[in-house]
Length: 519
Image (cartoon, rainbow, N blue to C red; front, top):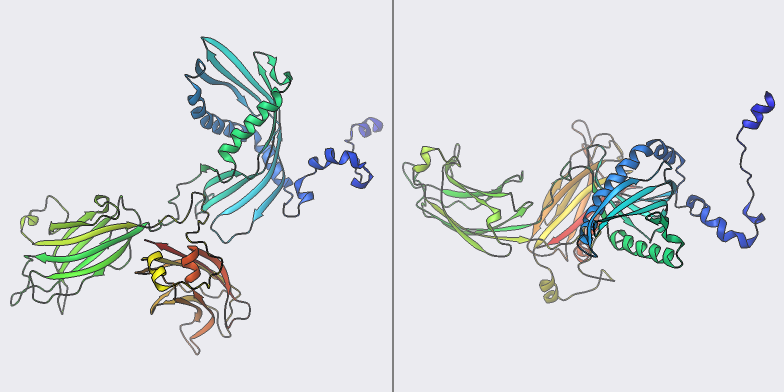
């Protein structure tokens, strides 16, 4: 009985050092060694292989559905050619043996995404049967014993505060995959034909590479990309408030004192205001304003005209709305519109004449700085950031635009008496401040500030200081460190996402994401 039990125990594999093998056998052994053994950048992920093994029956069905939806448009291209009347997938299964991950590499990045590179090998008992209808004859093509060795790059982006915390998976291949399989036509083994095996393999490799080899990508949506991610500005709206005519007289002893407020729907930014024209029912302003546009198809310019009052509430003279979808990019359009009391078409008070307002509008989209995968495309190649340019050349190359400063966070900031950090941004005399985070040396803000500029900040320096404050007691405020950054590199590169050492701080570091988008 004991002997029978011992015989049933699984024998451990024999482990021998590689030096004992003959050098002629190394080419056969080395490809089978996991990548985490040969490359220290790759991690061993046995736990993940166990998870895949348990989930494989469900992953198999999910992957087959993706393959079906991806293959259908490809089949459609061949229908009608070579007398092919239809192409159908009769059987599709990847089998019962799951793929194995022989190593996983994770990239450290300042970006708001996660980059993974697994080394995947799959040698399963797959069975794929394709039925081609040619001349009213059904031809069965069977693919069996599929073996694949592939190194994909998976980018989980953007990261959002909603489970599973990323909105999509972007897949691309970093090198051509190694593919082997058996192929049968009407039961006959086609791979036994001399030369055909290599020809079919290379053809499939080229086809797969043309679709997925980097920089080509395949995106798998997971969540709505709008979740937790604010829309980024896509252009500038140039508004010129020209004049108004025949405004209402709101004061008993004098004419109205009109001014105009401009804002875009969906924005929380303060409205732009014209100057006040005292005692004037036909004012002329000729004043220019710029507003950042995030969605020109849905956003609306809101125009409100008020009568200024020295004391009390300002009286409303009228309003109007202009949908931005009426504008053609880069084309100036003039509007002369009757003022309304409100936007309710059934309001009888709107029959009253409230005068007219005239404006000029131009929508200028930003230049595209980023490609589909999120990688930075340099607008201007520059080997030396300190290279001098003439003022005339710079004025021709760089015009108006939007400067984005995102205060991501900081590390190892510490005050002598208290550590309640906030970041203060000073640029061209304008000051903006993040929220205060109490009792932490490693604050995370993720706050973005925008500066609308008439010309690129080629000679400007931005000043960012981390300060600690408390409400009561002595030493209510103290500096935890600061940085001064020349923005010329941001303009030339389009974007800089880096961590900077803080001045007057022992180990403090601040993480900034700075972008310049030209109009």
